Figure (cartoon, rainbow, N blue to C red):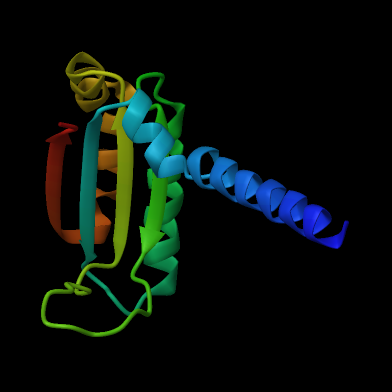
Length: 135
């Protein structure tokens, strides 16, 4: 009787873990639904200014209000292991997912995006963009 209960428990636990792994990953879900990825890295003019960083983060977060932006992640450098292949010279990053290339093009000329550039452009000295299409 105990072996049956243990097997049932282990089976249920494995099923729950698998379901969580499949449905609990927002980036994996975004890739499946929104194959166009726009990843931007910003270097601040005043890297020691927490106020400038927070202004930029707040500005980037407003871009979620553009209808073609399906998923938005805003981040700062993580305190991960320092390795040769890791570039942690940037200060703020945005990771966006779009349903298609037309949606990404709409984002580029949307008034909220243009306002963001006007309001926050003075905060950065460098911007690097990586656009990709899921294969």
